[in-house]
Length: 58
Image (cartoon, rainbow, N blue to C red; front, side, top):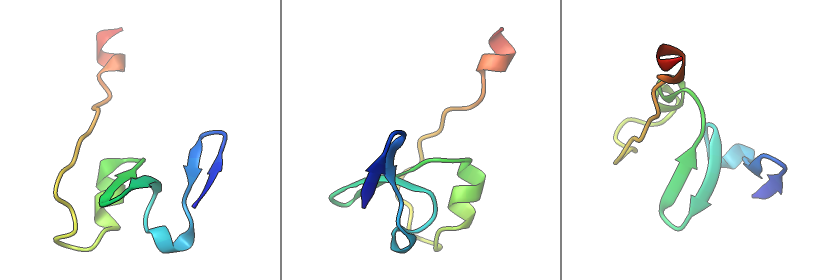
């Protein structure tokens, strides 16, 4: 995996929207609906999201 100014760059074999990998943990960046749809069934153990609340608060 290579890096760029925005963080690690995914290579084609890394799968959908891979941002970083450390051992068995992979961090994917993007719309959770799109990222999860591109992943194989049963391949996700945990999902952490940040809903777009900023626009609702200000």
